[in-house]
Image (tube, rainbow, N blue to C red; front, top):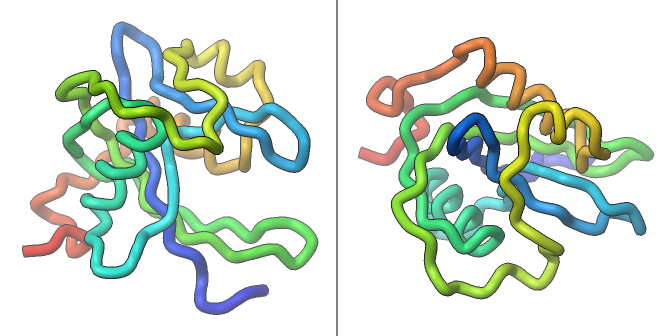
Length: 146
């Protein structure tokens, strides 16, 4: 196990019963994931989420709540990840080019998502927690800078 864990953020973004997802190539396979990525130096978790969604989808978003906090140990002694998953809403579509690692940004139904290969088990877990109504209000979170 690697230590310290890699801190990542992800966003569940919805529109008309669909979810904003990204296609990526992982170990030679086409997989889907929520827009997500790593926290960078001198960046808050909220800033990281907004930046990652913008870079991976070209949508500018605003966080509304935290869906959950997750820990995932990658197989074969891979990294340990700590993920903060936000619920976010679209503010606007921009002209920003997608991150080169992203094959496409897609609006998918839950059924479509569940039928495709996921980047990690956290994709389904975050979605399930969202569907079950799990929310941590931002104003009650110590993860939000004051």
